[in-house]
Amino acid sequence: MSVIVHDPFNVAADPKMPFLHAALEPEQAWPRLQGGCARLRNAAGQARLRSIKVVRHKPGRRCLIEYEVELMRSNRAEVLGLLGKARAKGLDHKAHDLLRRFWESDFGPDSPDGISVPEPVGLVPEFQMWLQAKVPGTLLTELVLKKEGEQWMRRVAEAARKIHQSAVPARRSHMMRDELDILHQRLGEVAQLRPEWHPRLERLLAACERLGASVPELAALGIHRDFYPAQVILSDARIYVVDFDSYCNGDPALDIGNFIGHLTEQSLRELGESSALAEQERALEERFIELAGESCRAAVGSYATLTLVRHVYLSTQFAERRKFTEPLLELCEQRLGLARYCR
Image 1 (cartoon, rainbow, N blue to C red):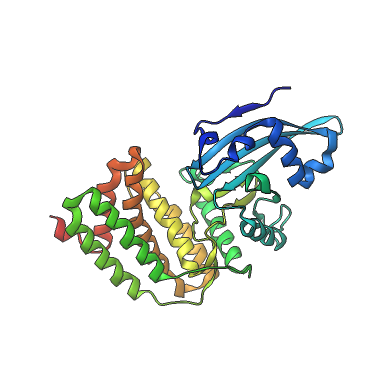
Image 2 (image 1 turned 120 degrees about the vertical axis):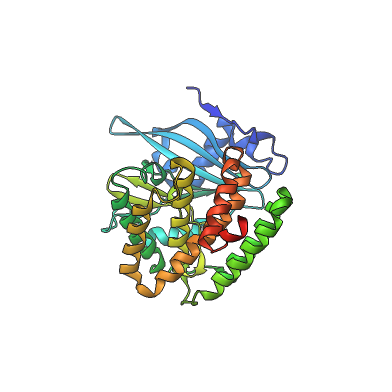
């Protein structure tokens, strides 16, 4: 039977990732997937490849490919989705091993608290790719706007706290100084795009420095560091956290502040009002404070503001979001007490 191949980004022509050509050829990809994934090897002749789809591509750097496999179990067809993460600079053994550590640290599909991570299922060295099982479900991004959004925010806080207390070792650290250095770099790029904003951006960075200096440094724990609604999948009553590529040691308040900052940005962009998701934000913060302690509250608010400042830059990277760049800048100025300079 034919295999459907969908490559909307033309990744097969990426000169820095020539192995992607074979990763999209069913005759070459299938035996290597079977060799790298024990679940497929064990299925023997009871499995077949149905489709290959390129999901994301950063030219010359990374690529995410979804393989859809049909498994026959007791004369009934079952569909298994495999996400292959390929990298130009080599197979990322460490990312696979990190997810495996979480999977084995009570983040499996039967964890009593209903908080899980995707299952890492193998390595494909020929494609510089590691594999994880695709989680069926709904991205939280689609649900935060609905009535049950507040309820899910409490669960998100519990998932973050579980990650922080997992004791899974991290190879890197990310503290407030690192966060501020990123803002200096990114807002410098915005200033090049909009030179007339240079004085405003300079004042904004100075205010960010003052805000960062006001945050007491707490004991570093393992944090997700890229925690926002698109990294959470809801599957029935179970919640899955995905994409641990940025996992490091840092302030746990950063994860919650980052999540709240993304909610505020989504609210401004999709609902036209930055405070439209205030109840969801409050539910997330209050549940996290219940779990982690009142000492985290100031840091959560500070990281939320710094995340919004980073979104000033991020909005310039997508054509459909550029009309929100100045409203985001104004919102950040208001939160940092700078609005009087812009009149």
